[in-house]
Length: 580
Ligand SMILES: Cc1cc2nc3c(=O)[nH]c(=O)nc-3n(C[C@H](O)[C@H](O)[C@H](O)COP(=O)(O)OP(=O)(O)OC[C@H]3O[C@@H](n4cnc5c(N)ncnc54)[C@H](O)[C@@H]3O)c2cc1C
Image (cartoon, rainbow, N blue to C red; front, side, top):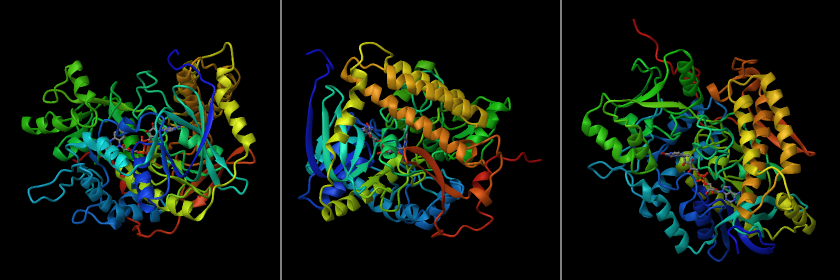
């Protein structure tokens, strides 16, 4: 058989809890679900291979948001994230995370994932955020995936690698009933019936095109093509604040973090071409990105991460992490460029846009138990709406999802599935394989993402958005009528581009709905340049209603931790004022 040759096949399995996405949140959700009911069947479905999948595939440099007793309190953290996210936060979920994440750190530690400790054996937490201290370095963070995998094997989680989920299935009472997936190497269809489903499919990281032009040179793990966002949408779940884009400051051309979270605590900082600091704080927020953008436009760019003022030994220590743990290619890249941090600063630029709650706030709407608006359907990690939750948030909220989903499964029987729905989905999935001639998925994808850059990248201009939506609709027609897939691998790409297109439509729709500017560069609308708390201090929820994309306002739930008036705009004051 030729590689990736298309095989005709359809099989069905069932389980109590189905977890889709085996990156970060997924493995933890599966472990917790199984621990809650060891007799139950838990399936972990992954498009790639759980051993090396997701944003943490190579490792991680540290925990960006650890709330560790003695350094920070859940109240402080909740306050910080509320302010960093311009107040649009349901604090209950953030607060619950903040209260629970320490026990998850201890659990990860018991898995063999090591965190930086001081001479007394206490966690050595560093300050990067504007107000509090939450960054915990992981000098041997390259082991994180291996340690997780060991736990999955030990718990006898049923792992299905190389299956890409395409659509969720619901029963007639609106409850979740399972999912359809396709083997990425044979194109065989696998239907999984489940009493509860947890979505952990990561960010929508292939929405914008990196300035390098490389389709897979994204900041995010490139397998995260927004399938989770698209599937939730088609299942009728609500998605929150999609106009709050993810945009990050990255190493130019390398398109990965520079990374100020690692180097900042040692004294490195973001500087302009005059070697001057221009922002107070290197923590990634929309307001910080706006100052970054303004600096680039002011003629004081490029912007750099500056280390050259540091002691040689300090730089060596930083390199130990930066070049070995999370992105081993980072050292190779700098070496290839001949950049020595002792002499030269690291040139940075602005990333492509994406959806990600891990770094901003755009995700499938969930409550503090990771429940979506569809009964029995859960979401956690970068694709769920708990803001700024990063890796530890994926683990912690993944654990909430696993526990609650198993409880749901214990109390419900399987929802019935309409065979006609499966047949329809099978035809939709395989449609590009049925054509003799047409446009390959990579061309559709390149065009879609180029249009995303041309029209949707902030600053957001209404006229551009309207034009962009028309152009995207034209490409959608090509995608639906003329796209071909000649083997199973191309079929995977053809399915991914459909998710990317859905995400582009949602990004445009959500952005046009919110008629104000908020979250700095993430949602800067030139036609509505001011923040408008009177009309827009609310979430926006996007969902499919009567077959149409619809947006509505949703009130921010009363705060658990009050924010004083003079604290509310602390993150707006990022720019360093010139002193006389
Ligand atoms: C470059 C980079 C650096 C980072 N650095 C840090 C850091 O230092 N500290 C920190 O705290 N956080 C960091 N983060 C953030 C952190 O890694 C993420 O917030 C976290 O890993 C997200 O977990 P997740 O489970 O939501 O997604 P992921 O871990 O990305 O997992 C998603 C999984 O879903 C799978 N998948 C996608 N679509 C499908 C489908 N259709 N069917 C089946 N499977 C599918 C993917 O293959 C993937 O395995 C970083 C992120 C990036 C990208």
